[in-house]
Length: 416
Image (tube, rainbow, N blue to C red; front, side, top):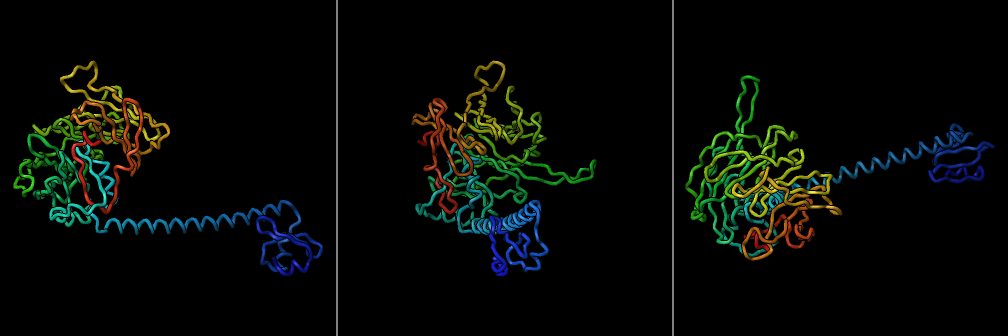
């Protein structure tokens, strides 16, 4: 409150910080700190003017608050950027961002689950060698039949964590233009697919185009533990576009991807297959009655050793699981059947993905009773019982710790 107001007579301050009083018989409203002359200039004699001055004062406070919020957001972004740099260039086996890819992406359909946890056990020379070569690696890992496929900036390995044996793989000639990898197992051998991009000039449209090429490397299972002497073989141009999706599912000696020409055109989306035995590409038809969705709403996954297609929208609370029947089985008008309907009511379903199927007994029968492993968000996992329609939390069993040792949980059908 200004001193001259106290001398002039009675005065008070409202909730907006405006001073009210009388000076020389004139009622006025003013802001703290103004001189008597200023208050004379801003003398108020109507309710409309009082309301206007209060509104301007509130607006000034709001602008100050907005400035503080913007400053806080800027500082928060700087802290996040520094944290990412520390995680990315820290002395850990893999960084935090790709540890999620390791857990949630490729490899579960091949028969294994990757798990990161703090442990000082098994500090053998092979593990030290892996840690040294994978320092600051920026490529996710793959798993298949209990073997890890590891990629560093300049080398490629296959690692058997049970026998603690590691094999160096010849680096492909187009390693620097890698688009994607895929790993499968057939006839006592691992087959590694390498997709890479090349630039080709289009004389018709007078521009540079990128084509996806493919090459394959066969590594006998008996050679795991010694450096591979096999050579990469070219398979030519990949017959279909990947739409930016690199995830795949491996079922019955075949690998499957979602492909197509247009990302958001359901009529252009297809399922591409690669036969590991004949080394040929092919196409698989979609379910006839599946909802028309974009590729972002579809996923391929292996459940009970069958190829399955998950169909949902981010704002829906239901996941439909289509299962492809084998050729030898009888089916009426469609190769696919709608096997499961998973309700997500009461669950945050904006980022949900099915990872695989785990048998709950020790018989080794893939068709026996089991549960579906589901990922919620980036760190939460759970089991879904398709018979009783119940969820069970798995947060205490699987973690994603960035600075940790690798442990491979083999034989996922008998995990529990």
